[in-house]
Image (cartoon, rainbow, N blue to C red; front, side, top):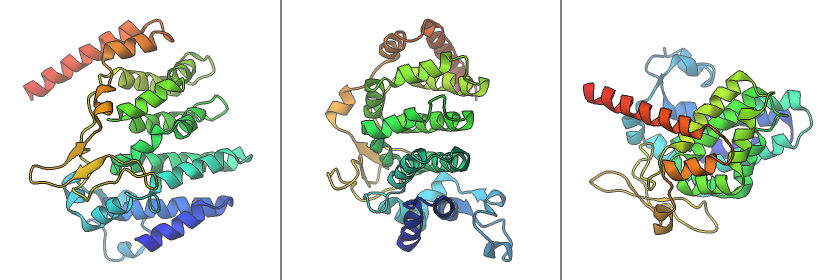
Length: 294
């Protein structure tokens, strides 16, 4: 697995468009091997490209991934900076955004964003990368009107994933005027209907009350994830008979906001936040009722 990551990282670090495309496909192929099952493929088809056959495979269930040795090894490798895929994808996005040939880079940016979202879901501790203002600013830059709607929409999806169960990341987002960026995109006349809908979805997500981070269901039992300047600032996971849990700094537990707190912040940029909050609460009530009835 290390050799595959080495090859893909070498391609991603290039400034050559075809090599970057190759690196992204190599990462996609590796993730497909880990996350998709070969059960429905014939022996002949299993010899063909992982990426080409990805749509013919079944996604492994979460419980299968947790027991899968390849996934557990991949998860372990993500603990350190050397093999962390998310950090490499962020660096690739920075490089692509600095290139002038937008027609050639937009599709690569979309591909990198799609893979980044997948990595943040597969390896939740990598979300702590977005504690950094420069990385969070990267996502906000992708919401700029100079980017195509598809890039803006995908950037919003990555932004949601980066903030998921990470109050510290949300505080970073707020500190660098992320709310202003998102609401400006929502109110702009040049913003497409699709992007406006994606932005509205983000605002509903943002208004949800926060709780202290807990172990993601994507995370298997692994060794401690170190907090070290030389490594990613991961949250710690521990293995135990009672399942996965995540130890969180006390400061992070205290630094959470309620819907009311967020309503005040968002109200500085939008006039109808009370309506959004009312819709959010009504939908939560309906969802709870449906769950109870089921």
